[in-house]
Image (cartoon, rainbow, N blue to C red; front, top):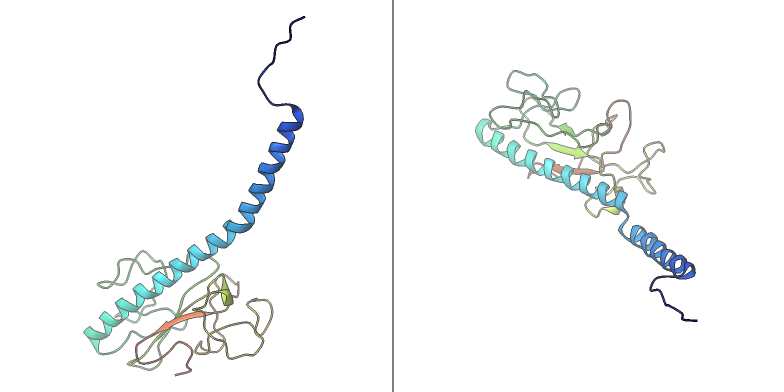
Length: 189
């Protein structure tokens, strides 16, 4: 009797190989954490949007000698005193064709400029990675939590009272801020 050998895997070899691949896949997902990567990407977009707004506001200041006023809803006002909608199609001519909008519809940007001819401003956003980002504001409240349902939560010190970076009835802390060169986002000026 003649035996022929077939090349291939036995059932045990296949099970062991699939098990090893499954363990490697779980380790790769745990290491990469794709949800955290998406959060970081959205936070990068927020930082970029606020930096772009800073450049535009400085250009506005050069042209008018003051920054635009902030409206009751903490948005930028145009030359006619109308509130400019974040992400609105009307833009903020001639400075921006489209005013940026937070990438998450449950969050919004906050613009604050006090006075009739504001000489300083503050822009705030809510970063999803919260205190894990070294650029978040250092909160004034001890033992704050980056959890909007628990008070106190981490928020920048210069945010106007009663204001947060949530939208559509959702509350998020304003934990990241930029400001005009003559102030800081954490100050109460």
